[in-house]
Length: 241
Image (tube, rainbow, N blue to C red; front, side):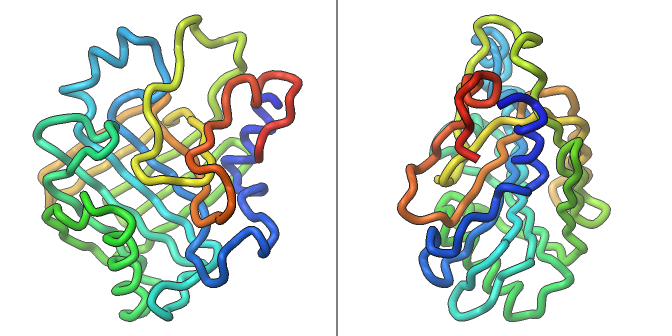
């Protein structure tokens, strides 16, 4: 499966599966997770970024079904920005110092409260951090070229599929996994991102890094954090998506 097929993952055409694959009413959908360090690279790049260039993370959750505490979440989107003064937020179990949650202005008060509680239930590290919130338009749009994310005037991100395998450098590999357990995931290219968050006094821009995870969450009965490898999107074997 080559780049065109991978783009279908990013575009969301294959993120939905038969309803029987989900536990009844379990929140489900897609996750886009942007890091300030590369997650698929050579060892030298990973080592050089591990401390100073790995302190920011953005998660965007796009719900395609389910509810939480009796509140319907289908169709909602929520984003979370996390920062730390030390350590690497791409490491498993890393704890942010500060977090900003971008709650969708399309949600009612009960839905906004349910989204915040669901996020805390998914991530004990987030729940333990200092959390602030904005209520803004949160959008996730897809096309053949990738996925675009915006959260008000504070966040923008454009993802694209990683290039064909023949264009990659020998020795590059996957070093991290999504910070939260997902069903299956792949790595995408940051085609351009801008974060300007006054609550954290943070201005963060990036592009050209293999620093984005695209994943499914909420599936039941499937392997957890299954990585769609280069063999699956470049070789003759059909991919998992």
